[in-house]
Amino acid sequence: MAKTLLQVEHLQVQFTMEAGIAFGVKDVSFSITEGVNLALIGESGSGKSVTSLSCMRLLGNQGRISQGIITFEGMDITHAREKEMQRFRGERMAMIFQEPMTSLNPVLTINFQLSEALRLHSSLSKKQIQNQCRRLLEQVGIADGEKVLAGFPHELSGGMRQRVLIAMAIACKPRLLIADEPTTALDVTIQAQILDLLKQLQAELGITIMLITHDFGVVAEMADEVVVLYGGYAVEKGEVYELFTNPLHPYTQGLLKSVISLDASMDAPLYSIPGMVPLMMQEQKGCPFHDRCPSGTERCAQGFPALQERTQGHAVRCFIGEDQA
Picture (cartoon, rainbow, N blue to C red):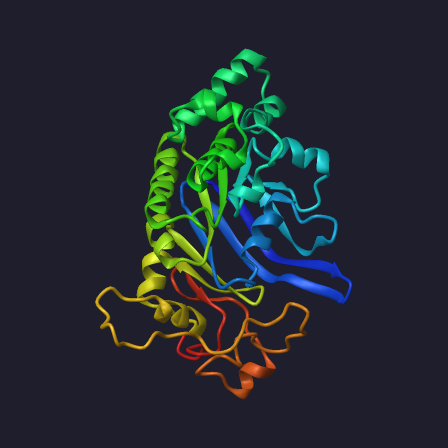
């Protein structure tokens, strides 16, 4: 039986701001099984990145997990001490951050940054660490390792920086790799190369991937299961094919309708979901999507159901279709 790597239960995350308390995540639950890639998808501001940073316990001084439990391989990491998390990060769970230029320190060499995880989590000698850094760069498709190791981030292209970040993340062969928008700001051909690289590394190292994205094309390419986030809530989750062919939540339906079809005519109007994502400072009594929803009712404005399974493995948080289920 497949082993559960990560379990997130009713996660709520608060940020203390000058204007008051903001909720980055309000209620998110999901689990990741070993070997089964999971994607978190939604618009900007839906809570995807905050959820991933919560799993790594990297919320900063202003953020905190106010409710919920996060367990990794049965270990409760929700309130683990920072020293424990420092040993944990990189070795068992690693992360590829969203912006390769800002994620790498501009004043430190690639060699120093790539070797850091090996210095912290291994007993290798300096020479062994150098050899391993060169092997890691080769593994992610960077041929001239010596030159790259001696250089600085600004001397590399966006695709090369992203490959360096991937090399840093896999240095200690973690069980779970969190990839936060791994193809953002890269051109189409480089995006395809990065996705192919991730799939290759997964096959070689047996890493399970948790993907953060707003791109359904990336989801179709990489994920086995999907969790749709909106307004800090998980509103739908299920297997990729099931969710693509039978989306149950109006928000998921709207996202899929927004994807441009290759066989669409040149003069066909582009679909977009009306309205804006709610501000996290706002109090939400009912469904946070009700004022943008084409099927919203007064009941939606007053209440918000729990995430309920409608068919095997396919759950949704919506009143629509509740009676039939």
